Length: 527
Ligand code: G4P
Image (cartoon, rainbow, N blue to C red; front, side, top):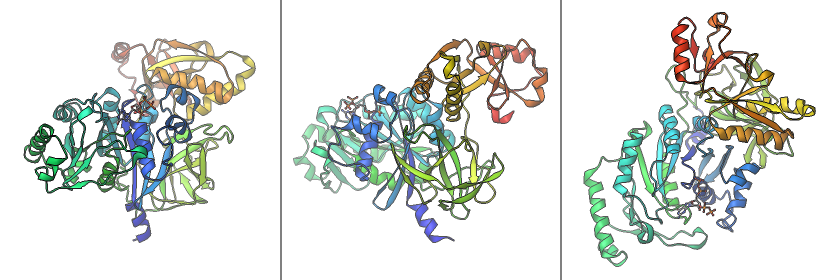
């Protein structure tokens, strides 16, 4: 066995942070980077907005709206661990890209706002993690603000997300009365103080929550309440079981305040211990890929055009699944069934890029993509492993798109082709709908806005968008294509596969009833 490869795998943690917008994902990301030394302490809080644009959010629109639309992977080292943090966009409209990024993670951190609990976007993202068997660690943020009832919050996680929530630390008060957290495992009290620049105050060692040392530090009423609560935790709830956590049955819960830098280090140290190393890439046959005893393999989970306006190139992001990657490696490409030399490989930190000479399972590498790589492609030194395909989310909103200036037609075509490659939305053509203009399909309205904005910014093309009344898209199985009635709303995707658009579920059902022989599928890979 390759010992070096094994030890590199074991020190890697590849994870994503999931949250409803505003819960504190960006703040927590920043604080983790701060601890990892990936960003400087000085001005960390004040320059937050500017630094946002310098790290993972690089698009003008993101800055304007204060939301994160594109995803990036950031690598940093902390205590001899190598952390690969996948930055997942958090806006509720902008989903497919986020969902796909999660597939490249081995674990996820779920950030909840203590005053809001489980919000809709968290629920959706959580479901993808659960379906994929990705273990989830919960960080309840904004404890310096008035919080919901804490046991109520745990119940909410259990009821809404169907996962057992087990606190690893317990907060001492909340809002104005927030005094810190009690670490149940280490029997330590971390007292909360607003420290400038995020300096860390040493925890107080105690023999347990009933230790008299605490009487001098915390007001009697609050202490009494916390002692009762901790007692309830010790005796009234299920104990933490790592196996159940790794199988997605349990989520360990931490509390803190990201903006105040409180509870972050405690969280991070526990996270490193709890989160799995990259061993769990599921294969189609239900088994897992062995990252140590297989040669290099990886899959494309993200494609991005014009990441940097100066370079103007397209990048494909690969998640390494097994073996060691070395720059210059020649690999087999599963879809194209040919070999490809991977000579230009990069790591990204916002706008900056560094050449990567080697990478290990769990790592993310960016490859210059002259159109060779698509989302879902598998690359491998030997026979590409049958990695379970990425889930597909059919679009639910449709529109025709046209370019307002005929002189820009060439750029328009190039723009929609390249942006469609990223999977922001799907492009169709149709003889019946849209008077010859391309049809675009997306999961949310914001995707259209981003698309138009990027066509303007990156390709200098002004466009008009006209919404269409369809909400359901189904692909026609190849053997039924000739039986489709001419009246149906036929469209062809960019690979020439026939799909039908329906105005609603009822219309789709009606069609199926009247055309029982025509097989329709949600996932175009299965036509
Ligand atoms: P997101 O990426 O999940 O959308 O959330 P983000 O980190 O941008 O945080 C949303 C808001 O919540 C920010 O305030 C941020 O400062 C604040 N916040 C994050 N963590 C905490 C916390 O622990 N306690 C409190 N009280 N607030 C927190 P903002 O006013 O929108 O932005 P800014 O002016 O602070 O930059």
